Amino acid sequence: MSEFSPLSQSADLLQIPQGTGFDRPRAPGLDSPRATSGPEAAASSQLAQRLAAVRRRTGELIAPLEPEDLCLQGMADASPPKWHLGHTTWFFEQFLLRQPAIAHLLGSYEPAPASWAYLFNSYYEAVGPRHPRPQRGLLSRPPIAEVLAWRGRVDLALQQLLSALAQQPAAAAAPWLELIELGLQHEQQHQELLLMDMLDAFSRNPLEPAYGDAPELRFQAAPPPSDRTAWLSHGGGLVELGFGELASNSGAGFHFDNEAPRHRQWLEPFAIASQLVTNAEYGAFIAAGGYRRPELWLSEGWALMRQRGWQAPRYWRDDAEFTLAGRRPRWGQAPVRHLSWFEADAYARWAGARLPSEAEWELMAPQLADAFGLVWQWTASPYRPYPGFRAAPGAVGEYNGKFMSSQMVLRGSCFLTPEGHERLTYRNFFPPASRWQVAGLRLAQEAR
Ligand SMILES: [Fe+2]
Image (cartoon, rainbow, N blue to C red; front, side):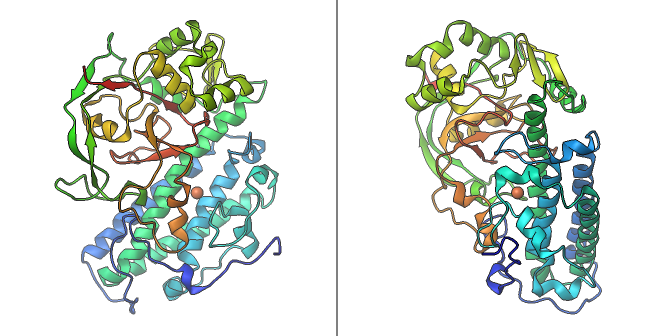
């Protein structure tokens, strides 16, 4: 296959997602515009504001960077900032602006060269081949100016599309509005990834560059933890989790397909820690020989830890910590961050406890002051489909479902997560050896 295969334009790629929060029937067809001021107009105008704000925010995130930083890729798992900007734009172009069904609403939108889809497709097999992920840092072209200009054209076309959809019957407009919402949620995920990836990249530079103070200030603004962690008990029994309606409703609004359906699960009585594990507590684990005691580790984790030379969380530097604000003194009371699942699991065993399951976490999170906004929390749960899960048909069905093996679920959100992106039922997931995401932990135990 040619290295620059043009995008497939086959009609079967145009699938209206179902189960990604897009549970409505397929669009019956888009009419000629008609004047309306109904709910569809309100939904479009609300989305137009969100679109502008989210897209602007991505641009703001690269403002502190130097031109050379924009192609920086510290490792194969990470991506350069310019790639994040291009990829999030490609997502809108591929799943909306290139779709023949809405071409007549778009006026004169000219898509990017087909070869750019090869560069900026991440993992969508149904869309076509793509540039190897570990080599994204080699993409010095297209230059940033062209990527930014493309972002501007896509923004304009999307705003134009929203205005046109406001004049369509609600049933016809809804699937497209939901795809735009998916694109915005996707872009917000990449905003966090961009910062995680910059931290990784800068951590490899002996000059220890600083991205800026803002993220770290947000982290430090959290109220200090109490002196003592309390255990919050739950009697167990038949409980509900996930997004949707069953006996009780878990909320409204957007959700990713992997959060649904809401379903029942049986839990034994348990207790969950009221606070996140802190740097000081994790330091005690290290001082007690945590990284030298095989009985605390799962076999795979022990082998990985020795092979990779892990001695502490990823960004610890003696008594300091490397952060987006550069090297900073490490605050003992701050939640520990940048641990692999194996380290979190070993710590829990050392502490005489265990990680909570995601069901336990979701049930108790409303009572926890630090469930969101500080660090993602590893759970004991493998990332698997909920009973009754169905991936959306077509290419967008590859968004979450195909990753449901060999990864563990993290719950909550972290200080790099864009505001408003967190949710009680949100399921983040990473391979258990990953440490560059902002991952920490809280403990759980059987009820005494
Ligand atoms: Fe993506």
